[in-house]
Image (cartoon, rainbow, N blue to C red; front, side, top):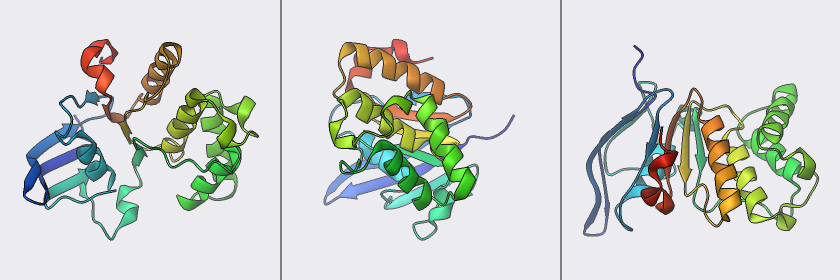
Length: 203
């Protein structure tokens, strides 16, 4: 049996005098979906940011496929797809322009980049709006774009912070289905306050 795709070992994070995370240990393997539940301020978003490499722990270690992740080595985080709570969407860009830009930033070039953009456009039913300005999209479509950007590089690990934030009930069901499909053969960690009351999403 292969080892975990993502490991957090003895993670500690302090803000001032407060220990937000203390000796946190977590491992997630291929095909596993883990939900983070807890009250506000318990460190769920901080955990995701550290796992994604957007923030760094004061102590402990993050490993991806058994290899340590370092602040000065962004390539060590290449297998991580991250949807933050507030997705940095660029409203003046069209959907396809935004995804092409991010593909380039993440090192994809030429036909590989074009193929990646077309793949996520189709996976999240965005083809009909690929030429539309992001500023003109509904909340549901904006969230689809956020999920699409997280999967551009076909990461092994998917980290989702409030992935259905602000969606209506119909959009919520649709987003959950998209996340299920996106999670195949990946290690997934997600947080959303509603899931504390709706654990039926968990496998």
